[in-house]
Image 1 (tube, helix red, strand yellow):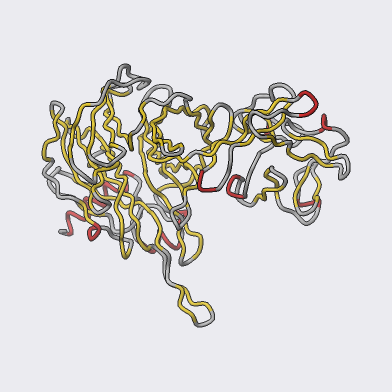
Image 2: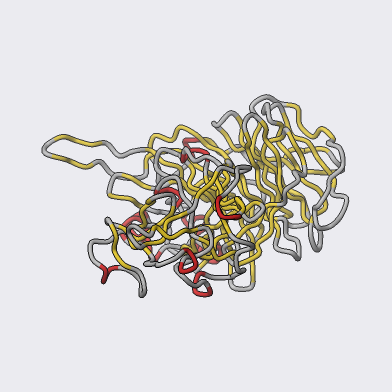
Length: 437
């Protein structure tokens, strides 16, 4: 890469969310990186919070007396309730993975850990290492909780869905385990997203809407079943069509939208017949519709969509050797395209980002994790690579958290990046949102 070419790339990257691509800055001060964390996205289905299947959680409900009060934030909830999927209830959990950072899962509900009353919120007290709401009767507790009169604290009133609750209460869905992957902005006025949802052996595409800044509500009915990831071909407002990967990774299909909101799609038309194809991405750059897709976890390939046919894009494939900022790269997947002054290509990279540590003389090698690499083309003829990965969420010196399957959109205040967050081992924690600085 020539020096002038590199300068041009870095200038463009600064405008698109890569303000300082130096590895030192990204690793030693993540707070000054190109994106800042807006937070985890709460995903809801029929009023219940979606939790990762990997967390080992089962579907569960809460016994409630009538419909809980509606809310937009937990500050609107009384008696120790939380705003969960738009309703003031106790926050049900099966493990700490279902709770906010720093919280414990105790007796089926999330609670702040404590050693003394002063560590709890006003009105709560420390009971057996967890902050609880004191009570004399169940009417003192939030919806979905009951008063343990022996200890005088509110406890979650959990139930199995479909079962009966005591005292005339009903079992309201509170937690549903689903595997979510490959989010994709639809670009519609109702702030909708396509999400790949796995239930058992079935994979489906579901439409979801942001009903609050960090709350995504899934439509109950799937748009398409037995497919992999999808990429949106945009219209002036909304969506023209989607490109979907087949569940068996045998190729790509085109499905035209029946309306601009992307609420229904026509039958698939084959676009690409090739084994090992997954995770398509689409962007309109300089008047042409560009496609990218993962191939056998080893390459990111490109094409242009012309009259319903994929033509050569003239760009070389991205290989594992092209990635900078990660060592021992073993997998490339889930590309995303963003058209600005340059065509930007974001790629999920599985490799080693951290540094080895020494514990009592023993060398502990850094662990591999998923992260996001950035490439750009100015002219559609060649790609340049950014000198480091663009997101660094570090657990410690040798362990970085995972980011994969990005989807980006540009708003008035800058770009937003929606992605699947996970731990270093690749276990998903749900969806999260980053915003450009």
